[in-house]
Amino acid sequence: MISCTSRHRAGVLLLSMAVLPVAEASLNTAQIVASAASQNCISWRVSGICYWLFCTKFSCKVRTSVKVSHYIPEVVVSTYTAPGGNPWREMSAVSSTAGGPENAISKGIAGLSAGGGNPADMKVQGERRSSIRFKYADATGHPATTLIGGMVPGYSCESPVTPFVPYFLSTLDSIAWRTGLPESLYPEALIPGKREIGSQEEENMWGNVYPRSGFVTQTDDDKAAAVVAQRVADIITRTGEPHVYQPVKAGKKDGYWPPDPVEENTGTRNHKWQRLTPSVSTSCAVFPDGEHEAAETGNEVYWQ
Image (cartoon, rainbow, N blue to C red; front, side, top):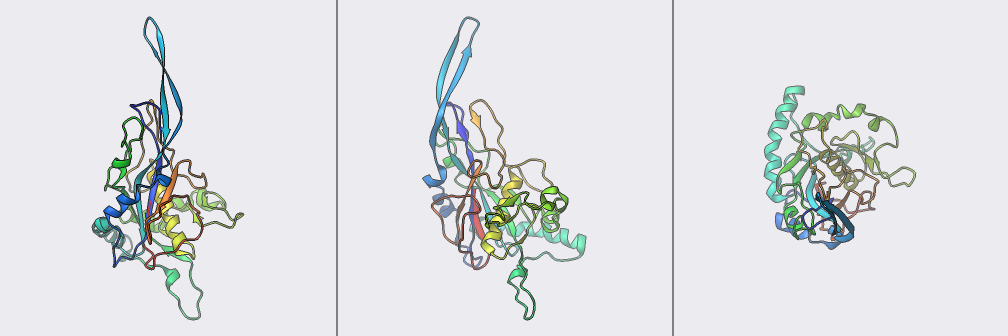
């Protein structure tokens, strides 16, 4: 985000991702707040000077102000393989409670009970191993967003996000999240090379952004979790998407320039990710960002 006066602020979206064993549930709010104090992730800097023209009937004056840019920890995105498996301890109850409507929807449509799991992990003798994985996902307001955003009036950016508020729960978006409809019919999902994280040419293609569902074709579980997290960020930073969610979007005003919607392969122009599990990273990056250890249970948490 970018700020240009002592009264107006702006910034860039910063996301978190976490991956943790459900049984341990070792990621808590205090750890997430502490992880946000990373200068590498916040990247506060003076990025320019703004000139303001003030005119009356009799004269005009030009005033200047400092322009600052930095990232704000706005959303924690958790991905997990089983219902209620959110590794963020304090928010796992929200994920579990939201599983009730998902079961009701699934039973009403297909007469089936919703469940999780990865076909890719099911090895059957004499058969090929599947590369299809399914992930649940939650996007929750970062508990430190109000601490970092607006911390120094006029020289830090405010965030439109409310801490601990769920902005996306895949269990409430059950139909689109499990069927991939209507996005499976979009050009982005049908045309190779469109909306891909990484690229085939550079041999670092992690997966497709579309359709933005819980199913991913990826043999690496860490990369599958990252693709799902990217899809969630893609949804919530836009309005009017065919999903059940609350948009994370701030309006422009004088001296305040919020980031554009999250988009892959654009560098750090509109977002960065910080990994929170299986171990907390002190730096931020965008996907694809190399090889990483995957959580044993497939449950990941990131912040953006």
